[in-house]
Every structure is written in structure tokens, then in C-alpha cells.
Length: 291
Image 1 (cartoon, rainbow, N blue to C red):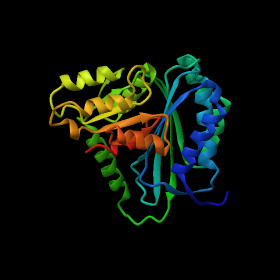
Image 2: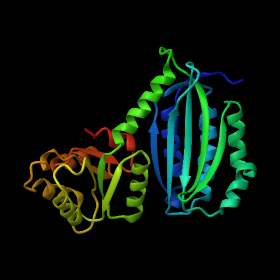
Image 3: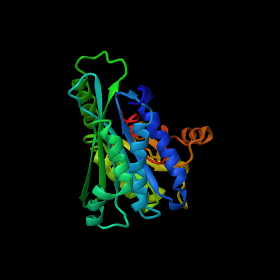
Image 4: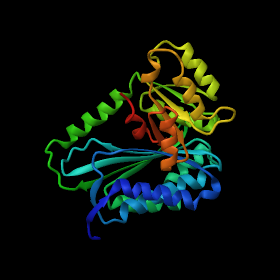
């Protein structure tokens, strides 16, 4: 048995996302990640989680068509053992180059998935695949010993936190302003999955028109793409703020951009935005702006 040490699971996953994005850059796959964790710090040999998750990511990248989207989710699940944290890792892809039956066969025979299962065996984990109208999803469940557990009823606490996340999203209405149809559909899917009501427009002028048409306080949040033809996100936001209506100054508008430099954030604030979320869309960051 390899030596156990404390590692940051969230950092491992973020590092994997960066590494795999570089490795498969030629496929130009848009990877959106959603990570909801209470316990980042776990005991591990430092290799098992990275190797296992890396194999799973490799498989999904290999069967996903270029110029497509992959949704990665890592959730902390309720645990029946206060000393251990349970996690569910999933990868969903819609545009794949294998049919449903081949995907189901791969669950038993693919080399990458076999290697992942080998690592999972040492972690007491499991893997399953599902096929639905949204494509295929590969789901991995595993558990690791927590660092310095001080709560005797941690599983109950986890349930409360996840419930609060869902409650915060339920009934909230978000307007997505995005000119790229693929990015719009991806944002809609990711936000809807956690309970938001999502509406979308594909231009700055449409965003201004729909906000004017809707009653005061209709939207809880506007996610504003920056790079759009004719009218970019900064100009659109400035014009929205100029609408003469009592709710407009309180409307939360957040930049959604591939650019994440300090100067980009500053320009977002100067145009009247309340914050900045870098692409790919991170739902956890979005929720920080909800009132």
C-alpha cells in the first residue's frame, strides 16, 4: 500500500483540467467544470485520484467530437462515515463519435476505463455509465479519509449545505446574453441543472429590449458575454444602466468572458457590472453574486 498523505482534491481536479485542456488543445473541446465540495483536503497517496480521474477524462475526450462541449461535475455526496468524505465525479458529452451500444461495451472493455477501475478498486469506488437525451454521462463514485474531522455529524452537515445550494438556485431567474449558440446552450444546460430558470438572448440590443419589456425585478442576475458583434457587453451594460427604472441600479450584471486579467475585471466594473466570471462557466462563482 502506498503512503497516504494530505492532498487538496480540488487542486488536483483543477490541475487535471488545465493539463488535459493543453493535451487536447487541437480538438478545441469546451470543458465546463462545476465543483461543489465541503472537504477539499483528503488523505490519499497523491496518485490514485489523479490517475483515476485522468483516465476517465482521457476516455471522454477521445470519444468527443472536435468543437464540442464536455460538462465536468465534482460533487461531495452524503457520507455514512464521519471519518470519510464521499464524492461523485461525472463527465457528460453530447457530440460523441461512438453509438450508445459501443459506449456501453466500452464500460467493460476500454483500456482507459479498465485502468480507471483498477485505481478505483484500491479506493473502494465504483463507475457507471448512462445514456439519455442529453448524450452520455460517465459517473465515478469514491471516498477518501478526511483531514482533521471535527464534526461528528458531518454527513448531516453536507446534506444541509447541498440543500442550501439548491434552495438558493430554485426560482431564481437568469438572463444569459451570449451570441455564440453553442455557449448559450451550454450555459443554459449547466444553470438549469442546478435549478435556475434560464432565459437567453444573442445580442446586446436584444438584452436591452427584453429587460425593458419585463416587469421590475424580473431578473435576479444577468450573465453578460463581453465579445459580441455590433454591441459588446460593456456598451450593452452601460445602456442597460441608463434605463430609467427604479430596479435597474439594483440589477446584478456579471461579465462572462474568456479574458480574466485584472484589466478586464476593471473594465467590467467601470461599465456598470457587478462582477466578472471567467469562461468556462463556473456555477459556484455565479452563485456568489446571487442576493
